[in-house]
Image (cartoon, rainbow, N blue to C red):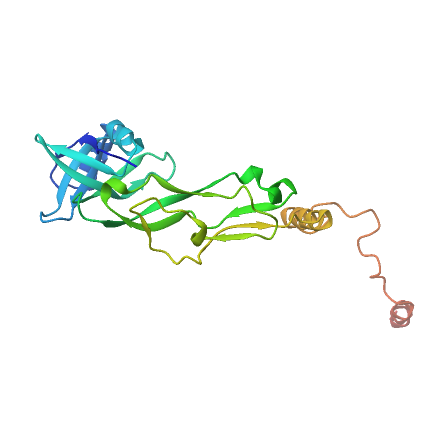
Length: 234
């Protein structure tokens, strides 16, 4: 958890068309909006590299600095390029450091490789990866963690097993499944799945192969009676 916020310089911008926005991104800038609190929405632009470093820093609160004045805020939403992965737009929410807010944090599993069930060949599935919490801005953890190193085959862990740091309240239902450890699949089952996958990939068996000589038309010969009938017609 953060004891102080990370500073991020921003500059105001006018709402413009998509062409101007694309030009901003080509210049290494990311458009964004700051909203919430007692003030109206503020459109801004920020250096993409500085934004990346600020988001990677410890703590949820980022102090946005504009014209020498800082505003504590938290990241509310971000849009990423579907291929390149870089940030294309950000939304920040103004916060008061003495007022609790609701947000989401990631949930990480620890010790999965050490679990007895995993060592016996079981499959560990991470079901819930994000949790809704309530906390003061500076008490928001980077993530929640759950130790699964003691899980056996057929075990299931829920949010009730996730420890919440002091000052943090988990808002999701405590019976929400977080992780399961299922038995290993039998070798015969795996072989059947593999064969089914091969058949699905290749299609009908023998598709594209030339028929053997003499095979085509086999069984289509006319009955002897038909031949006699033709002779009678002559």
